[in-house]
Amino acid sequence: MHITFCCTDTKPEPWIEGLRAALPDAALSVWQPGTPAADYAVVWAPPQEFLDQQPEIKALFNIGAGVDALLKCRLPPQARVVRLDDAGMSVQMAEYVCHAVIRHFREFDGYEADVKQGRWSYRKPRSRADCAVGVMGLGVLGARVARALQVFEFPVNGWSRSPKSIDGVRGFSGSGGFHDFLAASRVLVNLLPLTSDTQDILNRDTLSRLQPGGYVINVARGAHLVEDDLLALLDAGHLAGATLDVFRTEPLPAGHPFWTHPRITLTPHTSARTLRDESIAQIAGKIRALEQGEPIAGIVDPVRGY
Ligand code: NDP
Ligand code: OXD
Image (tube, rainbow, N blue to C red; front, side, top):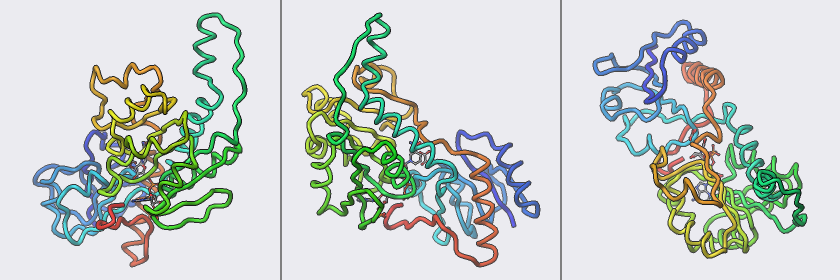
């Protein structure tokens, strides 16, 4: 069995070492033009040339949860696309989102600013009941985030394509439930995959439907958000602020208004990092299962787009 590694911007050696330890009988390569075709590949943003040279490949293991970039390529028709299925990401996402929600709700940014000016000041406690958090996407990451928010007793709404039942989460689904979901939420957390249905979904119309003083946390993909619409609603005062981890262009270009906006907190696409050891263990386990003809989780439906 030949496994090749083709991940842009990722140092291959530690991955090859880890895969060799987990699958000692496999032949491993770091792909370059001319490398023989493989049975399996570990990929992130691979060039089209790589995909065109894989006539027999059984599965492409994407070392992230989002497969939007990979699905834009022309894929070998027989290849299954397999996403990372948590692999240590959901706990990171839960801590990132809880941190952002709590920082906003408790006004810790305001306290920080006051302390820097030597001011001992109090702010009026806000009502938790008035701070319903709406989580868009109740998959591997969204469901974990929804559960984590409940620990702090925020009312939690969830929106997904198909109806979902998560204890304590008020569920909404499909396009029919979207406007009610938005109207019931003051803080909005985006954990949708990027597909043709969800591109630009955070826009002037949808964000205007949040309760006044709304707060946006985008941790999915930059192309979900219409950036000028966010800025306009912040300026108009309908939105109180935003925490953004993902952007239409990454790295965020110098001079982009998000860098210096007083009510935007940003991080460099780091809310839930791919953890190498957990990912290798998961991929190796799935390759072993596939070789034995057993089913695996995390196979992407290319028509659905996630
Ligand atoms: P999943 O595929 O497990 O879950 C996706 C969820 O979105 C499902 O609940 C699905 O509904 C819902 N959904 C999809 N399309 C629609 C739609 N049109 N309308 C309503 N709901 C929809 O994904 P993950 O939770 O693992 O990851 C989500 C995204 O997070 C990834 O695609 C990636 O873009 C992003 N991500 C960002 C990271 C970062 O560091 N910033 C790290 C990792 C991921 P249903 O349940 O009915 O299928
Ligand atoms: C992912 C990501 O999709 O890191 O896993 O964004």
